[in-house]
Amino acid sequence: MDRRGFLGALPALALAGCAPARRDRIAFRQDRRSWRRVFARMPPALAACVDDPAHEVQILLTRIRRDASGGIATTHDQYGWTPRRWFPAMSMVKLPTALIAAEELSRRGLGLDVQLAPDPPVLSGEWPADEPAAEPVARSLRRIFTVSENVPHNRLYDFIGPGAIQARLAALGYPDARVVNRVGAPVGDGRNTRSGRLLDASGDTIATWPARRFDTLAFPYGRALAGRGWMEDDGRVTPGPHDFGHGNFVPLADLHGMLLALALPAAVAPSRRWAIAEPMRGQLLRIMAMMPRDCTDPVYRDDASRDGLARFLALGGSHDDKPASLRLTGKVGEAYGYLGDTEYVQDLDGGAEFLLSAVICVNADGIFNDDKYEYDEVGIPFLGALGRAVLEDERDRRGRRDPA
Image (cartoon, rainbow, N blue to C red):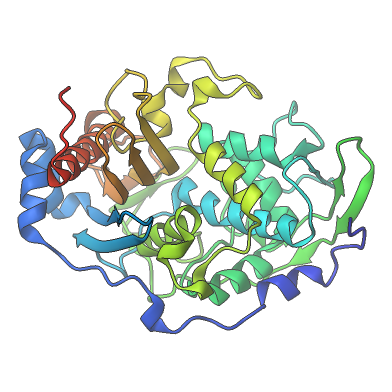
């Protein structure tokens, strides 16, 4: 077990290799006839959202086919995809942070049972009094992927540091992604990160990591101005578009590609694959597919932790539990009137297999930070209906439609 300190080690991981050529990026096409079939399966009022500019809908779909020898073929489709459009990265930004943290542990020959113990003072804008001083990485990941808690993400953010995160994303071919702030904290809070210790299961120190200073990166495509106004903490509304240019941002195609590379490494170029040991990759996928009710540490049992809020696509808008034959592996996000989800869908009964990513804006009044968004009325039902419609269409394509 490597017991050296972390100072100077993370950049070596992050900068290893060179950025992939642009030709390695996923080439999305648009098959309008296929999308018409999908949208026809949705309730008309929800299907109408896809072409309403106010909703800023973007959808990416990777269809997966396997041959008799286990070989994988993929086709990539899109609807409304606007690569340079700003939208908040939401909690979907936790996906790359978690995977880069797993890479660093894997590089050191460590497992997800090791504990992260950031040093005080607490810099995050959200760190409850009952938050443990040290926590196993596996527990942090369960909190991130089941109910999308912010603090465990911020723990990983301090561990890796934004500079190493950005360098690693660029090396993987995602130079436009920005993971430059903690989640649930003021913009700019991520410029300084805490030092900390890596502990074994007994609480003994394995290694340390340093505090870091990071000069943040701006939105890569110019100014990120959005909305009709911004509500201040005192209730006043500052009129005009709000500038989101220094917050987190990850293009939808990047999130889609990151999940594809984790779930199906053979489907992407070697330069885009995560450097995560195979046993740990399996653990990650199991955690990312866990429903809140299946988690035993921590325990989630309230209505706010139901399956449809853990996985919007296919389950959104329903209070029913996920069918046992359906496996959903991914990450949802919700912020400022935007909802997003990227999911690897495995339909064990019907045989369908695909990746689906989507974002929708449901902020009718155009005021950000006022908590008046149409999540329950429009956003979550839309994503649920979209996921179910794609699933039904994929089952039909295979000629094995589920009788139910």
